Length: 263
Image 1 (tube, helix red, strand yellow):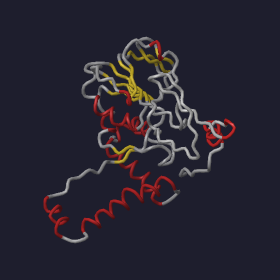
Image 2: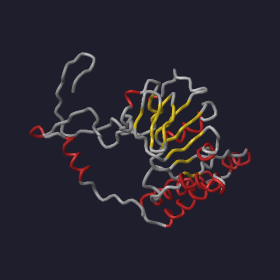
Image 3: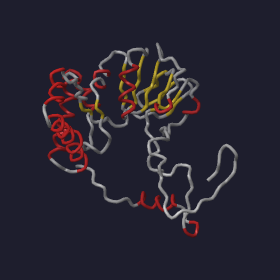
């Protein structure tokens, strides 16, 4: 292991190695030609540049994953125009946030086991059922798909069928992380928000080019996830006879275990 501060290299021998460096900690950007030529500010959602004022700017967000689901509704009201470049739409479910009333809090305090039963309900509803919805070709998976579709249709009106089609996933629920958002879909109904499903072909010094044309951009925000498959990151761990742990895990990634995806 190399000490970045002193430059010294240390070697450790251990019978057991536990990797605790995390998985969602190294941002990834899409490989789009010309990205380095862009002269305006650009940053990843995980490395937000708070010095950049987005007010009145023409902003591009590349990606529609969980971080984009939070950023898109929050910045749309302040930017001049927001151009969202989507590779595949997410399944979106309502947040279902609620507050406990004063009476319910009093019941929790005074009536035995009520709070425990509520906790059990939350476990079944938000842990057990979602697990079955994601990992099994189950009734719950079908119900989750129906719920996501109903949420989409309740927030995007029938006269915007073009937008409904763009935002409808063509893969089974659970194959990608779903979003729990109440404000994601309505944001695309704003006049200053444009959803583009054509992939970016290249980035110039002040624009993004797709098959549909060229759009002038002031700021690019990358919402393109993380390097999730390289589990060890920059750490090189070697075992018996100098065999690299990364090379062994690489074999697992090339021939993964048959983890089931619904559908």
